[in-house]
Amino acid sequence: MRLTTLLTEFSRKLKRALTGHDEAVFIYINNFEVEEYWNEQGVLKLPSLSVGSAADVVNRMEELGIFLAGEQDVVLLKELPDSGFIADAQAIGFGRSRLIATEYNEPGLNITANILHCQRTLDRLRELADTQDIQAYLVPFGASDQEEELSQRTGIPLAVPPADIFRKVNDKGYSRRLNAELGIRQIPGCECYSLEELTSGFERMKSVLEQGGRIVMKDSMGVSGKGITVIADEARFHKCMKLLEKQASKNGTRAVNYVLEQWMNKTCDLNYQILIHQSGEIEFLGVKESLVEQGVHQGHLMPPRLSVAQIEVIRDAALQIGAALHRDGYYGVAGIDAILDEDGSVWPNLEINARFNMSTYQTEIQNQWIPEGMLALAKKYTLRLNHRLDYEKLRSTLGPLLFDPLKGEGILINNFATVNAAFKGEDRVFSGRLYGVIIAHSAEQLRSTDAAVEAKLSFINEVK
Figure: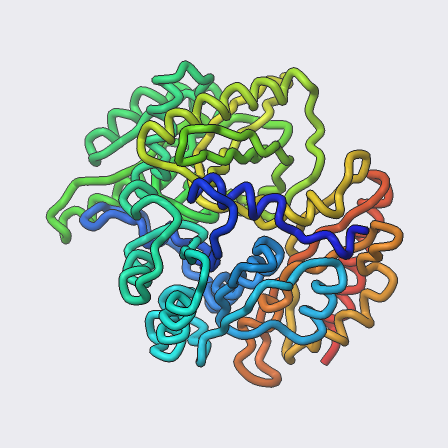
């Protein structure tokens, strides 16, 4: 039954929210890390570490969209998926949407920029819009000036708010101001918009350090752990200020956009999603336990280990935040990061990610293959390779660990493109990522499958 069910539950819900009806054709542009294009000009920032070919890998995360789009929709890709991978996806009910790949994949460009540099793909999109009986819309991970340009050049409207709304509501300072307005429990801290405010904010908070705690300094438009500095002593803060002052003397501005917050000891990270309709209706889509390392998302645990009371605190905050976002011009998917502290209490809003989230791409998998009573772990696995990894080789290596739809357990691979995305030539070592969702009947089985997958992939790492 599951294999023949059309996977349109979330897709139809999303269409109703964004367009008011559920028969539109959505053209998905999964432009991960769009936040990079929301940065303000003329604002001082601490230098960040650039990691080699990481962008090449991030830019291939657009393949995750195959597990989100409905059968009548379109997914834009930098390259067509591996034939074995798409066959496996189709065997469990995914990957049935139309796939359009750019004529040439420029690895350093995200999917939108790649399309804007490819006239043939632009022509195909115009032709698609002209021949479509049903209204087509562009649906990005999040909208920036690039997606607005793509809409303009193809004549296909965006189904989401303008880029300036995305910039406004994704600012970490906006989240803090919303908490204050709505009376949502908030981590002690302050927003800083100049070097002077940064200094005075630190002076007010440095008692945290004196009591043995830490302060975290966050770039308000930072993404994926970038722009986060943990301050354990005054010397660290003054070193940061010295770097910013040096930039200020060169750039002639003292403007910054940082948040200072007390570092909270936590039991776990949480992420929950809401769907905001253009009409103002707010839907709570659920909460997951997030796996986070050094501020960087690593995966999700489903269901979260929360009490009914803790979930209700999150739900209440979600509905308030959703209503405020709608009032401020935003509609669509929003993910909110929260934490559970050591005494079991919830801090419901660390920051708002008003855009698609990793959770968004797991929604149809969850709806279709993770019924109540089952557990799941969505995770990325890092590979160190000196050769292209063939999908069939990966399949044979994982063997019985792969997802079995009859048993309803195993690892369901939901992105293979990121494995070889940074490949530059034989015998040149590169890092790849494999994305998968492990589904199990028990916590013990979940842990053992995860450990077995790690062991098998470690063997692949050693293959020359």
